[in-house]
Image (cartoon, rainbow, N blue to C red; front, side, top):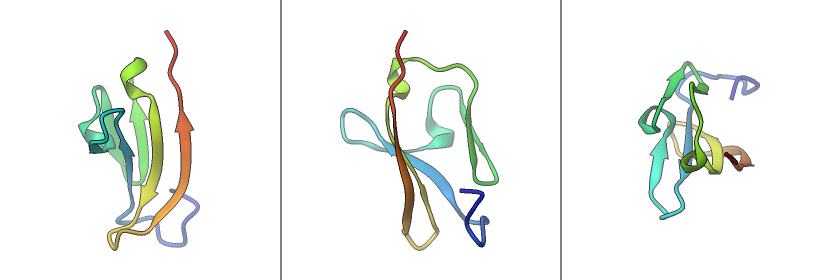
Length: 69
């Protein structure tokens, strides 16, 4: 999300395989600092579509991430 003109208020989100909406900070071993999502140790449960979302609900830069073990 860092390339947005105003990166404050942005968060990284995703849908789980079960369709539940999650924030980066609610992921196992995940944390968000500013608008950067860091997952310190990945596993297959981190697979999904991730995107940046503004406070007003705008979605930007979706990316599909697949984790293989």
